[in-house]
Length: 264
Figure (tube, rainbow, N blue to C red):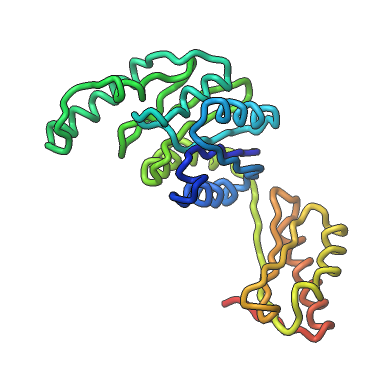
């Protein structure tokens, strides 16, 4: 499956908050053989959220996952922006409202919150785009949302990492596992020659094996240690092919008087 992420929040764009959510989700999407095609980050702006979503929909991924902007404050405008992008109205969702009420009552009864009952800010989190299915938030207050837009499945998740991870594991991970593909990544370290010296050879190999992604990563300073990795998604006989190309690269490096550093 093809997946895109839409990350929402001014705090990310100004550098106040590090977007660890994208990294965490990318690893899990990839692990199960799916392609993360693009990560888009936008601020808390209705027009920008709406237009960003519309651009993603034009690319027709199988799944879109958004993160952030589901809270009770005025700048939490993800749901309204998504509704605009889908040309749907916001409506009070009774299931979401009931869930939010229970969370706040529990927090008040335990003495965590001093304000009892619902306010318009708390109720705001229950206004979802038409056709939404609320997703339970077992850690926080704001429910997540699932929306079907044609063949695209849209999952709207909180930005708080613990809440996002819990919801992702409960809702999205089973889907990734059910439609699991094959992801392969192998590599090794070498020294004695640098990236620029090996680059013409890896370029030729990428032309020879277009279904593989061959990448070099400098590790320490200028050409002291370099990692080469090969990535493949859902390639027939991929394991054997990756091993074959790795052997070819090792032979090239040795012919160039480089040294192979095997990983332990």
